[in-house]
Image 1 (cartoon, rainbow, N blue to C red):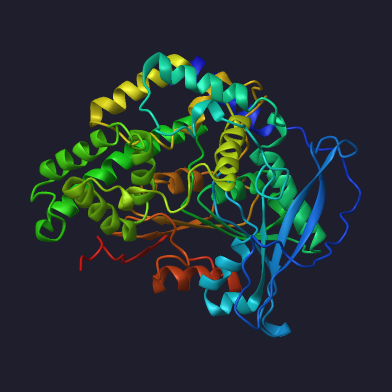
Image 2: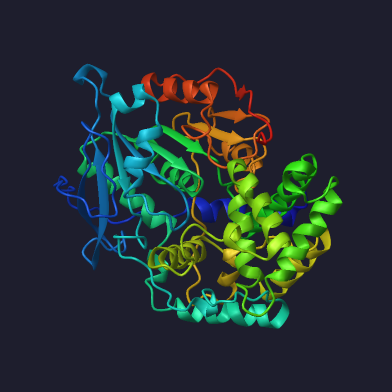
Length: 481
């Protein structure tokens, strides 16, 4: 490493650490819980869910300035007082994922011992759902149908239009760092001395940001399907490459079952069938290749969706139907529009942006790796034209935080496992639990793996940090009926 390179590293490290702290604020009032909105499902009896709104500063460095409301939900612990371990804040990911109903849906999957020990707390992060939702309108034509396959100057023009449409939001304040301060405000309002947290996907990034700001208030924290500590655009490119590898695995898997799917008995034949279907989405009256890519992006991340995807490809080739190749909910629904808006606003608030030249070069490279790459997840490209550039990167991790538990699927294409290893270097003493021979996104209380769930439950209940990293045997590729 040259002297200039060492200086650049030191300057970057200084920028990450020299984050100005918010001004001191008055003690946080306790939350007043009551009925929840209809968007929150009722848990099975005798459990109950209750909701509240927490007032926080729009800018935590200006506690006397404008305020916004953060929607919070709670499902109380079902065990005895002796079993109680406190509150467990949960987040489902995104950026842009609504966490208000997640207290109910995720809790239902948690080990019973964890449900008995913890009040499970959900929340809509700022910019999402019922917490000052972001609205970017047309988002540069993102919701148009048919969804075109844009490249070159046309693609860059769409990114600029998207950035222009998002300019009316509170761009610098709908950030991961501000949300981490909101999480600490929730902790204070619950009268908890430390924050216990389960964050999945982007939730892991939120947890890492919290440890950077509040290492001495960090409790038992599980970061599942970890987003690596990279700039968002760098992460998006890493994910796009992983999706290409996963798609090849899907082609090989479908080719191994030619009688079931009829797409060919070699990966190359399945690949050609896939490309014919994608080309068919460009026909008049069809939804467009962009719509097809969104379906594929969603399907590649969870192996239980592979059979429906392969069946959809076969049906489209046989009779032209697209019923099996559509998202379960309309892409342009209000919830989806909010998700897509919040996703861009948060990513662009968290760190530096790519240049237009780099965006085009990366897309050219990805097209060179394989035909029709799945580029749906490269949301941070819009940051090239953003109306507000952040002053610093979101700080992640701290050597002063207690050991955390990081969980990864060995072949997760959405948050590749390398992200957990990269983040762990910023969290000394933390351990990684890896589900080997697994190809899905979301592991703990999701894959039904007793090794993973038992290890994480022991950590949450008793603070048991494994002496070394843990590897659990995974399920392999999905079975075919």
